[in-house]
Length: 379
Image 1 (cartoon, rainbow, N blue to C red):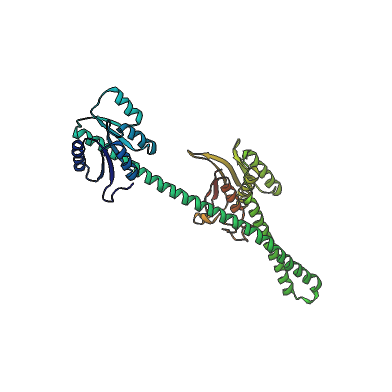
Image 2 (tube, rainbow, N blue to C red):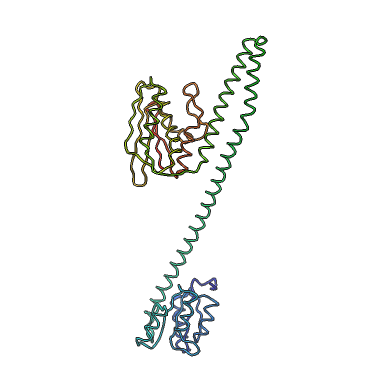
């Protein structure tokens, strides 16, 4: 819009009678001092001014020499459909009214124009223009914010993929030197045992144990990278049956454990069955491990419905944890308990969280030290 900076709006007024044009222009100037007013004496001149200045509102007479108001209005609507056109005429017959409506004229006022009426119509039209501008500005802000969010999401996704690829590569590259360390330590124990004192032999045993531990960590890192890079192929899945299978395997592995399972029946999810099984194995395995100190352990799997999502949960009555540490639960290799208390490498919950996120879900936990923990997730 080519308005002077001191004006908030602009109006094009087209009228072939000079006295009428000057009188109404004076009234508009008094009633709307923040309006830039452009004056034309026929439709052709009016159209030229419209193209040059793109006013917010057009007031026009109907019958004029060179080009009529309706012809000009038709041309204006063709290039700017949203521009409001108000027709002012001494003719009140139906033919003119219908022609004006077909052209897209929003108001049709009879001459001589009532000052209060024309002021009210102009005021309403300019209020509509103001609202349109605000909506356009808000939409532009929203578009910019969405574009920024999309870019940040794309950058984050790229960074995560790069990190996962890096983890996978590093894990592979670490295996070779570890194998050499382990091999030479074993060689020293076998071929030079007679030359080693007890402390030397113990030191080599420590090297072997730490190499084995490092191998376990690398294996966990590789599995984490492989599982979290897999594309989720979703399908309807019986999660209750999946949890029962995981339960049976755990009970077979440690039949001496006294663990009461409560598994809600008929729980289903639309998900990648292979990936979600890994997530559930980690969550239920976590509950199994940390409920071991209990004489009678309890592990529960079920759902909670809320307004937005179906929430799945795995609950145990194990050792629990300090909720202040909850945010770090899903960080790879971060552990809340020492190795002497519970074995592990700190990758299970991180893997579960990554799989849940791959499904567009979220995961969180509630716990109290000594009273157990509950892990909630959505898919």
